[in-house]
Length: 113
Image (cartoon, rainbow, N blue to C red; front, side, top):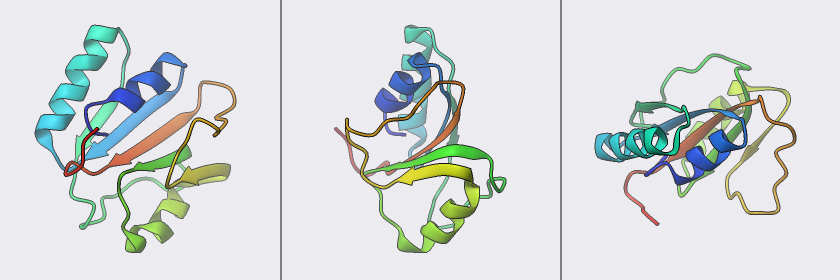
């Protein structure tokens, strides 16, 4: 989730965004920026090395920014609704479709923009 740049962008597009980061400071910054921008995002501090619990088939999209943990991939697949997608290296060419979809953003607190 980092400082919330991508989460805020997606929330402005109408997505229901949740983010995960190991850094409490990054989550705090993201939440403050979202408040300033007038959007709502959800966030949690979690160490993805200790795979956190998320409901199965809860998300339309799961995106990993600057984070790669191969052991997390099977669980990520379970978090995605049928017909949903996951992205390990998002780019501007990815089409998210209509808003009102639920997105989980995973981000490493050890890397920044």
